Structure formats: C-alpha cells, structure tokens
Image 1 (spheres, helix red, strand yellow):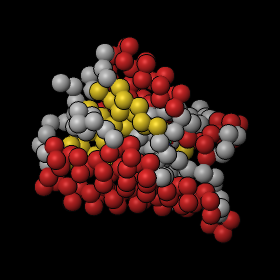
Image 2 (cartoon, rainbow, N blue to C red):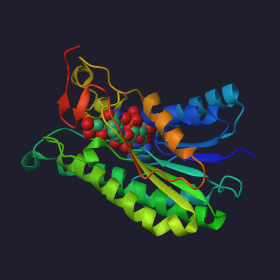
Image 3 (cartoon, rainbow, N blue to C red):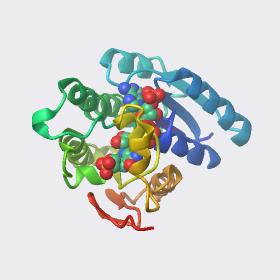
Image 4 (cartoon, rainbow, N blue to C red):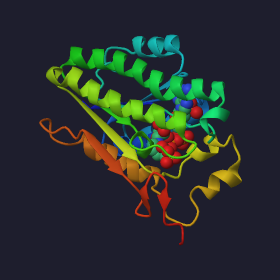
Length: 253
Ligand code: NDP
Ligand code: 8X3
C-alpha cells in the first residue's frame, strides 16, 4: 500500500511542486486549495503520469467549519495520513504598521496561523490513532527575521516557527515527527498574490538574481519526509545563493 501525504495549498507554487515530488515517489496524495479546477487538473496529471491515487479537497482553510468537514468526511483509507505538509499561506501588501490594513491582517493570520492550527489538530489526532506520522510546516526566513514593512506576515511565520517547536514537544512521545522548512525567496504566485495581481511589481521581486524554484523547496520537503523513522529534522532554512538574509540580496546578475 502506498503512503499518503496531505498537502495544503497544492494549486500553485511549493504545494503543487510537492504534490508532484511525492507522487513521483509513489505516495498517494491529498491535495487541497480553493481553486477546484486546478485541483482537478493536478489530480488528472498525477494519476495519469505516476499511477497513484489522488484525492482533492476544495475548501477555504480560514474557515474552521469547512476544514473540520473536509477532514471528518475522509474515508478510513484516506485517514491513514503519513505526512501532512502545512503549506497553504500568503502575504498581503507591504506596509508599515501604522498604515496596515485590518482585513489583510485578518486574512494572513486566519490562513497562515489559524488554518495551520486547524489542520494540525485534526490530522495529528488521526496520526496518533495510526501510531505514526510526520507534520511538516512551511515557515519562512520571515519567521526568523523581520524585514521592513513585513510586520504581520513576519509575525505569522514567527508563530509557525514557535508552533513547530511546541508541536514537536507535544507529539514526539506519540511517534509523530514535526519539522519546519523555512525558505527564502521562491518564485511562485506568492508575490502576485501579495501585490494583488500587479505582475510588474511582483516580477521585480525576482529580478537580478536566481531565486529558489518551487521544486527546490519540494525536494527539501521530500528529503525531510524520507529520513529514517529515528531521524527528525527539526528545522531547515533554505535560501537562494544570492540572498544572504531576509533583506540582503545580490541583485547584480
Ligand atoms: P502560491 O501563492 O504559489 O501558493 C499558495 C497556495 O496556498 C495556493 O495553493 C493557495 O491555493 C493556497 N491558499 C492560500 N490561501 C488559502 C486559503 N484561504 N485556503 C486554502 N488554500 C489557500 O505561494 P507559495 O507556493 O510561494 O506559498 C506556499 C507557502 O510557502 C506559504 O505558506 C508561503 O508563506 C510560504 N513561503 C513562500 C515563500 C516564497 O518566497 N514564495 C518563501 C517562504 C515561505 P488557493 O488560492 O487555490 O486556495
Ligand atoms: C516569503 C519570502 O522574504 O518575502 O516568506 O518573506 S519573504
């Protein structure tokens, strides 16, 4: 029987690349996100290319009721989740604290933090019943350092780092591994979302240097997930060569 990975936010970027990487390695995959058409297209692609089973769950991770319904309706086979990748997340705008937008703050906190919490509670309970599992949280360099105008996004990712440490303490005696992967700049739809579809501004974020690709991060996620059972990689910080810290880039290329 194949192992099962559940990846939140698999309609794009790191989550989608992770779904491909795990499917290539014969995992059955549960993919989630709000964009149903993308979920269905990815399911078709993975099932036809990799001979694995794919389940799509279309829900908004900010909405507790939707998350509970999606996990509770899994049938018994799909409940045997080996790996949960808590990836769904976003940043909205870049602005100093005094000019911040309350709605943007709510969306980032509800998605990056509360959504991750809902998933972790529900899936860790299933993993405890199964006697094993691995939760991999996607943090960020923004969870290790603040950068100008990044305030609330940085705070949510600092919280992901804190929660990763706390969940590790809560779950290690149940045989559940807990890890964080914290990437620097990755070229995905992240900046398009942050700048509300302003592609020109989004593109500038990745100009003049080589950012990470979604697959670079997916490879690291798979590496962390595929260590032997006695090994727990607690934290993995992965940066583009040309990004020395959260806000220092060599953009001369
Ligand atoms: P993308 O915008 O390409 O992908 C984000 C994914 O999150 C999409 O699949 C989106 O699905 C999903 N998502 C967002 N909001 C919700 C929601 N309310 N409910 C369900 N799913 C949601 O960005 P990335 O791949 O770059 O981002 C993935 C993770 O990586 C995020 O947590 C981000 O913070 C983190 N990260 C990104 C970095 C980067 O530079 N790109 C660097 C460090 C960390 P849909 O819209 O269909 O719901
Ligand atoms: C996403 C990367 O540097 O924009 O977490 O925060 S950054």
